[in-house]
Image 1 (cartoon, helix red, strand yellow):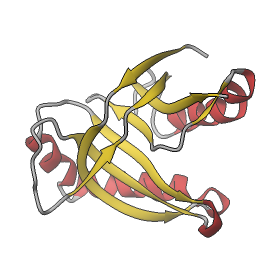
Image 2 (cartoon, helix red, strand yellow):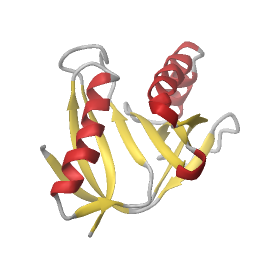
Image 3 (tube, helix red, strand yellow):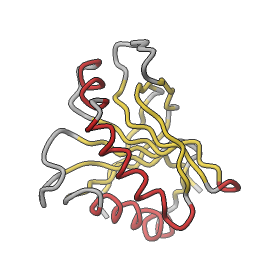
Length: 159
């Protein structure tokens, strides 16, 4: 798998959060439905107007294995430190990030990349997943196109 590693300082994101179940892969369907809802109700458009970025970020955070749940956030990087009461803000901690490209229609392309990262890449490298959120970085474009490009950012530590 092609990847690059970068160091990024802590940053703030602003967006909408839901809690979802991770039982039996249920989170895949819940995340897709959440994206559809946020596009339909104007959440994504309002987020675009808050920042000066063309990237939306999907963030898996607050994973609780014992409760089989996690939070998922649709956000933008809050480069201007806005405090819009309609949305939640979170700090993404400083980390070393392994960045993987995903090419193809969503959500299947990115789900395939995530599966390969955790089942193949981590076992074959000297890295482990750091205790920080996983990011999906989505540039504007046709997300159903066979050549749509986005990225998965995984926080990593040396074993």
